[in-house]
Length: 198
Image (cartoon, rainbow, N blue to C red; front, side, top):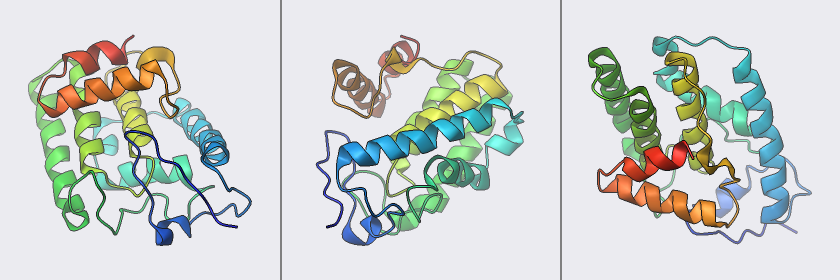
């Protein structure tokens, strides 16, 4: 039967090879996929709650990939692996490791020099990593969990509320979120800062 996906605004389409990485053959629709992914993500979030992470653990490629794997390993065979194809958003796939290294250098610098507030450091990281688009799927959800880990585990602040909404489904909150991300693309983080705490 195969997986048939209707992608919403801001979602990255999967190619046929990536779809073959689906580990649950009975999934046939976006709604079913979203449900199984959400269950896996909730388990990853639960795992983070019992952990203590130092900045040097969080700010490295291995940890970033491990979080994505925890979020999606029960659904996708390629969970935690960098994408091997170009997408309509994100950088060319062969530049991912280098761009990620630059981002990790930047966040260490922001942290060491108190360049921004803790919220802004976490959200700048979130914005940059989603714009790199490391993985075939789940980049937005992964970037939000990474921001939550940074703000809670590194800065000992409450996790973000992200508009207290499911941002994977079409809604006013998703539209507001995407508008905030687009403003951040132009170096204006005010909307994203406000939305993350709304």
